[in-house]
Image (cartoon, rainbow, N blue to C red):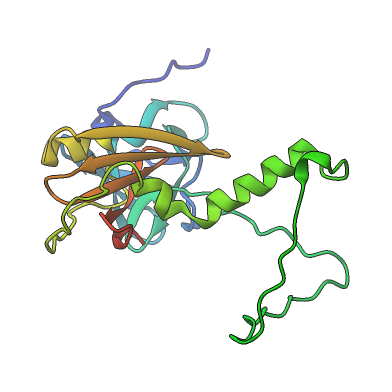
Length: 231
């Protein structure tokens, strides 16, 4: 008869070795021993390499006792990067070029004395461009001007910010940001493909904080310049 899962606190595991599921990326050996805990993190040591890492409690699920090893569930896919455990970010894969396609040369601007040709395009009469293609073109333009979208309706006419050392990392979420800075003047969410962006406006501080999939990604000033970003 299987033993039902046991909840946190994980100090109930004692010195018994356990494995995370899913395994933490960039760490080869997935067998750990519990060492200590704080109110928001636990400290574990790798049984093979003796490396110690801290894991935020908000990523931890239940632990189950079962042969041959104890399993501790993770609520998110995590990766070990630059000495810290952070949520795994799925990278956008560039579309491959067509066969025999080569990089297109950069178009040089026309000489001042030569007027640029004017080409009229009448989309309403063209039957060769379906509406779905027009939607894809518009989406591509949005990708090219993300800074303008992020700041166009929040900081027009506001003063430039003073230098500010943004005290946030990739593991900070909305709650931890509001705990330090208070509620934002505006809070807007926009989803692009499978990624959700959240914009937190702080006019009194002169910047906007950007959250990607619920976690801090960076900050921009009133002109759309990036003043801080996580690695």
